[in-house]
Image 1 (spheres, rainbow, N blue to C red):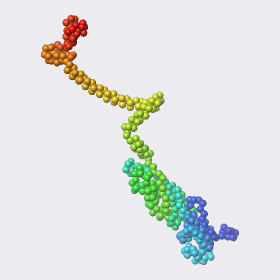
Image 2 (image 1 turned 135 degrees about the horizontal axis):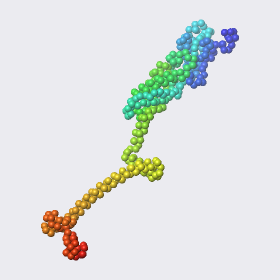
Image 3 (image 1 turned 90 degrees about the vertical axis):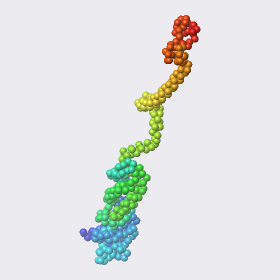
Image 4 (image 1 turned 180 degrees about the vertical axis):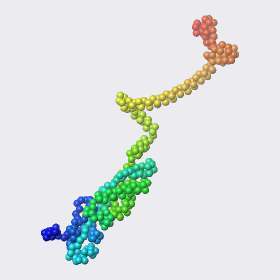
Length: 361
């Protein structure tokens, strides 16, 4: 290093230590101190949602909340902890300054890369997929530096998001199995599952110096075949009486066939309606024929009884016979007809005049 470098402004010791973050995703930022030398009397400015951590000789020396501080031997606790100050307060000391953002980092996404297997009381074994968002913040800057950041000069959310996402998905799968909520009831329990997940995960996040401030379940989806079965089940519940629904469909098909008798679709609907109407007419005709036969049998029996009541008597034994009988069923005498004395034509036995010549019998 030359003399000009020593006299240039860039070679002066740091007098103001502050961090203005315009990235929006930076968790930790190491302040660029030249040769890690900080001048006695330098100003430290820590803004809201920030925390400054001094690391001396590889160890965390002190942490500063939001405020303005003067690096001197009077009011800064760090000076009593740094061994470099044994040479006097007029000498610069070497230290690393890390600014840690303590704000909430929102809209971080999570999702199940593979389906989660669970046992459902309605559908048996099902596979579920889920996704949502979560929010975190650094609750313990010193623990976060020790466990996660290390000596990185700049640490952003993408550097830790993968690990957090895998941890969240693993815990969500375990929580979903423990909850034993039916698949049809999951949508009404998103908030309860999110609250349960926050309490379950904060113990793990605490070891990293983080806090899970929000866990939101946006959707839990079922496989397509299970969703199709659910749709059918819902449709059957809406239909209600299947018999009446079938009649309604047949009536619609008849109407469509009448409106479009020449179209292909109308022809198919007409055929279906024709089969339905044909079956109905066949049933109706069967009932009519059965009733007709029953009525005919009754009529025949009545006629037989009436005929028997109005039969002729046998001229030999006097037995009452049917009007159309030609012989007596008791003695065999011919009773069914008589002979005309004029033209000899055969006439009924009970006839009073001949059907051929009109002679009185």
